[in-house]
Amino acid sequence: MGFPTIAGKVHSSASSDSPTYQLPAGIESNDGLLLFISSRQSDMVVNDWDTFTFLGVSASGSSASSLHVGYRAAVAGDTDVSPSLSDSAESGAMALRIARNSIEPFDLVPPEIAVHTPEPPPGTSHQPPVLSPSWPVDKVLWLAASSVNSTSIRFSGWPAAYTVEYANAESFSSLAQTLSSRELQIATEQPGPITVTGSMIVPLMTVAVLGGTGVGGGSGWGSVRF
Image (cartoon, rainbow, N blue to C red; front, side, top):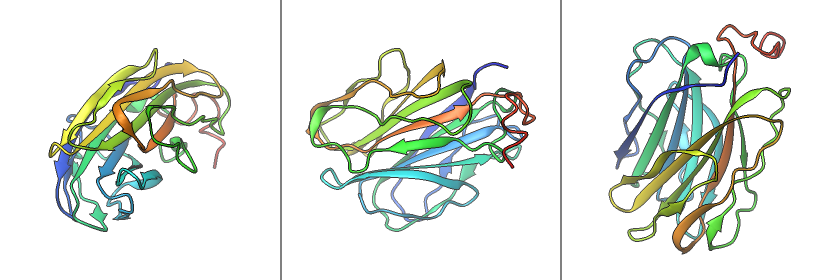
């Protein structure tokens, strides 16, 4: 059994309470899909995730931004998703496709998440939260995500030893998202700092995806969870 493999990614933007966000090309049945939605409004709520399931949210009131994430086991030919939002503020979405034969199926073993509560104070260096997934030690894809609401402040540094998937994925010049990944066989992880070019509060999250064979038995975990 190997580590989860990112097979595709795409970023899209919207300015609507009924946006349509793109999904990566080439989706096959039971690929794992993750959707990170950022809004300029800290109190924005995803009222309906369409075909996705809500995983978690981090909101930063001072910078008026929020970061939400949902997941689903894909259906072959998926091309987009149309959630319902509580307001029409500018938003952006980072979508990841994780190869089906590299993970425990998401309908058996969903991704897990940690967010800061409360969020850290304003600054230029921000540490994503510690995450200790409920499954046994195994091969895991760790993800560190954040967003910033500013026309001038952008991300300038990313967790050490992580691959930067999106450095500054911009939406309408006022919203930027970042996402980094790392493969580690470890029980607990805290990604290194994410830095920004000016002092502010930013939403932060750490997400873990369990590796597997695509049939629910890679670690013996997916086959017994339910």
